[in-house]
Length: 285
Ligand code: PLP
Image 1 (cartoon, rainbow, N blue to C red):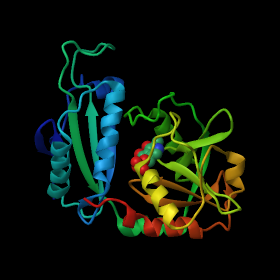
Image 2: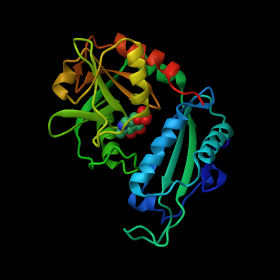
Image 3: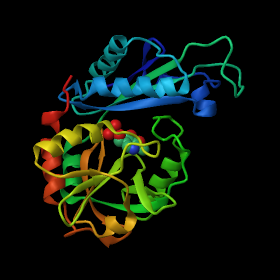
Image 4: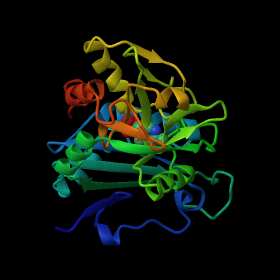
């Protein structure tokens, strides 16, 4: 089957899907993106993802390229045309194409919109979750507004590669205070010896994950105690459990950090229960 990609109003064969070399996303990483899980052919938490997209665009003063409803139609069309049952849909909006100049284009140009979709291997993801993953810590050298979901991801790319080079799956960013901020493309969580679930508050130093937001509801219904506060790497080493969250993998247990075994070295009951319950609380499109 030929993959289909949406580019600026057209559904194109993936191999012919292109933007101009002077797209500001390509030249300046001047754009934002969203990744939504697809399950049973339906978008998970579309409303929240599009609301966050709008917020990211507002922060960068890029206008919404079309209404929420129209964007939703494009997302679903790309999912349908690619016959995605389980996978992800990717949406990117940049400030558009203009002669290269750091300042915003005058007059304004239309934002560029790209949507791709990809099937994921559900059995492989479940196997990964059943085994748990290793993470390594890296210095958080990102800019001060990573709450905006921009396509400027070079530190995240290097962090992820550093993890793979060390035989791990994800990297956890650690700031100058020794606090874990988040993963390279995930939010970071621990469960303390007392059983409290801890994750960093959604300030400007992390992305407010949609999975993270939904998980707050799941945690409440599981009768677990949640603390939204910064935690250190030392605390994470000593945690009973650790896990990461992201739309593409929901809840993924962490069983090793910097080579140190976490808890019993296997997925713990809290992460496992939160993963199992998650989709009862997410919005299915
Ligand atoms: N933090 C970062 C840096 C990310 O890139 C992502 C997802 O891409 C997340 C957190 C998790 O966000 P969400 O749960 O909305 O996928």
